Length: 450
Image (cartoon, rainbow, N blue to C red; front, top):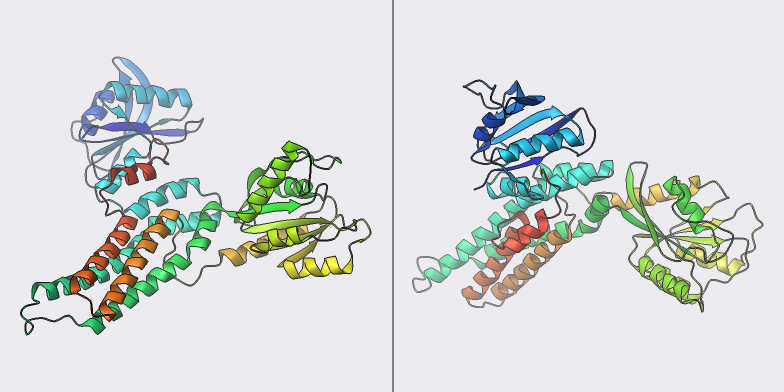
């Protein structure tokens, strides 16, 4: 196993920067670059020393040696805490590399921690989620995953299924000795039902978990010049979208992450919805409609000063999603017909009245809707990634087949086969896999140094 090294802190100006080294030659490399260290080096203790290249002192540092397996990766690890800054960190890393360390790939430290049994795959994924968290809610979820909440829950389910497999295969092994052992089908069905119920509960948490991790996707739609981009910019706190008096200024969608009252939202401004002979604008309208269909919440912006009827196409576009309607330009007289107001009320979860320069009502409404959508569905573990959902769905299907086979009195071999498939699905979630491309896909997201 090669010894790897990387800068573990942000490559930017800062008071302190850290070089992390992991592998069998970590300590010899540390002694090479820090020859002033004492002959006897206690583990997990900081030592004041210098990084040298020959007679040249590169930096005044603190160094720590963490003996395996009591380290992040489970291997011998050293860290060099030097003065922060891009040039200094790169120079210290170069010295470590010259001493024999290979440069780490993205996620390689965390991958080694997983492979060495220091964490399961859900915890490894949570490391990058902690780093990338853009809201308090996302950070809380990531910290819970990193502490093992989801992994512990899945391991408990695997244990139940494993017992079911053992009982079923024992019945197969002793099938010719009916007085020695027979499968208790009622007990097996009870066990399968218990696991299935918890799998269903976990699957039911996906939408909430995804929204917490990625942010609630809020898409602004409406007709040209209704004021979508002005409201979008107000919530962003900056001019992200171009705003003019000319209808159809926005031709494509624009995205911006925001935090409203500690809640993560992904705002998307879109082109105005109307028929057009302009090919560019027509493509923009098509993209607006596609964005609306993928939204968690649609902000439907309506110019209340115009006598426009609500079209069936607009209602069809808004029907599948949560809608916050904004009756905009509240400084102008209301010109919408009563039937249009009724249609807006019946289609929307919330109706907000806005005047130019004041998006506070919309901000409050979005915070209220977001809190409702992010409310946890009871206590317990939560899933937040499509990979989690897919693995659980496969396990759920296999459990259903096993239950059907047991109820129908089918051969125990069929029951055992599906129980093992359920076991595989649950195992893939926490990392009991042997497929390299699955691991590569996960750890490729990571920054170098993690």
